[in-house]
Structure formats: structure tokens, C-alpha cells
Length: 173
Image 1: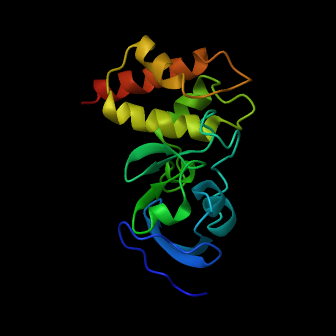
Image 2 (image 1 turned 120 degrees about the horizontal axis):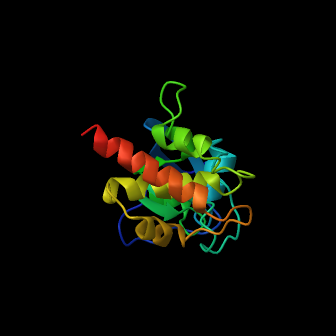
């Protein structure tokens, strides 16, 4: 594999593989990707982070949501080479030391999982949202969730889970 280091504003040659180094869920990792490889495919097939799901491949459904440098984004709209040198967090990184996060526990408690296909992306958006809006209203949670398409739920259990986590976190501060 020829390692092509990327610099700002410089085009990457098509048809070649490029070394992509990033921090995935707090751990340094690297893999090879063509310049056209989507981050969602790179995560799943090259790095083995299969919790990131691919639904629509157009950035509409939200199933592929991850956090890049702490900001939620669609991995099906991001090229793998764009995360070189950056931090990427996936649903696998929410649990710590084998313990589900408070958000994951709330999803379980409120039965906000359904089939689970879109859950990973929703969890990543909710985690991002709660950091930016620690005391959200129900309408704010629903507005945030409008960026996700789920065929299995009416969203109410998800909203309840997010509000439950926000209340618990605010109670402890």
C-alpha cells in the first residue's frame, strides 16, 4: 500500500489506497481506504466497528450517525480520508468498562430499542444533543429526532428516555 499523506487543499488520487489514522472510541487505529471510501464502510469493513449501520446512503435516515471530533455527523456522507488524524466515536464507545451508559440504560428501561437497526445512530445523536442541550424540552428532543427515520417506533419511548437521562444528570449536578 502506498501511503499518500494528505495536506489541506490537495486532491487525493483516485484508485489508490491511503492510510487513514484516527482515534476510534478513544483508541488509536489505522486502516487503508481509497479516496472514495465512505466512512461508514471504512468503520464497518476495515476497522470492524459494525455498530454503525447504513440505511439510506443519502444522509436522510440517520442510522449511520457517529461523532467526529465530538460533533454528530452522517458517516455515509463523509469520506474515510476526511477523518485522518481526527477522533471518531461510534455506538461501541458509549459503554465504559462493559457497563452501558446512562443513555443506553434509559433506552433499555423505556423500551426505546424496537428492532435496533436505527438505534445506534439515534443514540449517537442523543448523546451529542444532551451535551449541547443538558435540560431539553420534549419539543426540543422531538425536533432533534426529526433527523432520524425509524419504522418501528412512534418515538415516544425514545423521547422519554432522553428526558429521563437529562433529568437524572441535572439532579446530580
